[in-house]
Image (cartoon, rainbow, N blue to C red; front, side, top):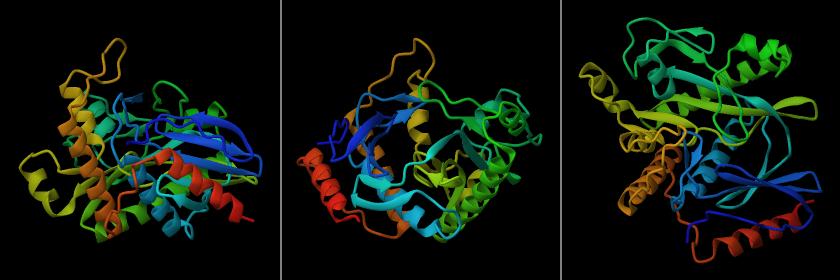
Length: 314
């Protein structure tokens, strides 16, 4: 049984927010309980069928990366009592996603193919092919929408609109580049290339901290390093470990999240392949064997794990 929807009532719970993929529960003792479901979103639309074990992969990979990077950038993590759950400190969200791109792919490649040579105020070199590396990684922020589509935005517009103070934005830029270096080095050690990713930040006790997930297949694109040069030389699309192949499947079936476009239903065989890709990325990046959590009654499993964790947390 996949974990598609939750409606928990944890001890001390004061509110709940159901996001596209995660359900976030606020507790009165200054804690957040974030449940990573098996929902899958693409083009900012939640798809109708769950992906078994996707939430577990995202949660365990993100918690691993948060733990390994906490000496570089402060984050919100306290613990992971269940394969699908992270508990951390509540932060005041900053309504800007910090997207950093080392390679021309995904949204940037689609914009480039339309003839655009400036993205989020950043000039793009002429003569690039999809999946080419940028001379240096570029930061292309987007607004963080509660509903609907996130939108590209420049550094100048962020500051002029007062979305973030200049001091905090500079901190976010520095953290973004540090995390991208860390993620790129981790990927390289596992035979992968971190092509692009995004980070979300918030304020905790007046300081900027990293929140949400990092370096997962939902937030990042990875290429296989051993075939990268060969494929670029032959103009062959890069082999990827990311959610991009799901987006490509949807595009091929006439869906890009635009108004009045019906969402195509993914066949079971394709859903199984998505699960396999997520597990492959987890095992490749962590070097650990993926151990599936019990799917017999995931709701009861999660509730018990969280309540036990809260009892023992002082």
